[in-house]
Length: 269
Figure (spheres, rainbow, N blue to C red):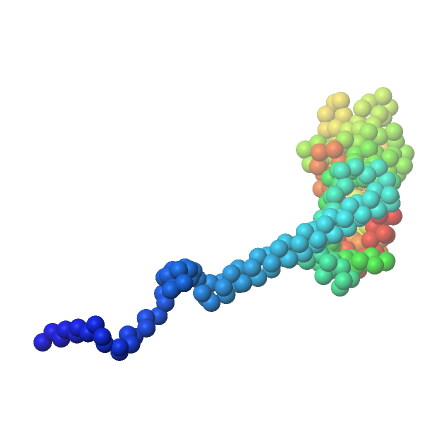
């Protein structure tokens, strides 16, 4: 049966109080919004915002510091090397300030449009270095570097060794040595190769005259020997060795590798 309860007018039995619900009006007419849970959420959001701001500030400070260090390194490089243009140094890895405190930079890359080292004009210089100390003597644990030695720089070395007024050009992966002999223009095509840790040599590919191609042995013996034994010494610092060479447009690309190298020795070489 369905039970029906009717409260008598004079029934003093208290009614069961109902809990106040969210957004429900209390007896005083005010609306209660939220509660303890909403308050905790607000504090959590505030904490997260604060953490994000602090991280952003730390990142900005770190990036500012690394950019300042990179500019300082470029300035030092420009002061110590000759004829530097388009130099750029990038310190990778994050955070930089932690690396600085540790005293060693994980990885550094560098480049320059042109610079001069040991009397050679170098273009398209590219450097990769690992484990670079942040205090003197600024040692590099390991690294590689490459650049193009200008044909004009090689021309001077070849002229000194051959005794000829020679013109050196580079096209199509071949070096060409042009000179006059008994009123005839001679062009000797050679390819470079690594002949030692700090020396490159050339192999004669062809000897061309106005009448056609001849053998290098057909040249006078003194000249033939000089052209067949051309050497280009490179003044490399301790720990650095010649890795590869190849003829490219306008010169010879040289690649070197190094371990436990003093950075200032690289610039001074």
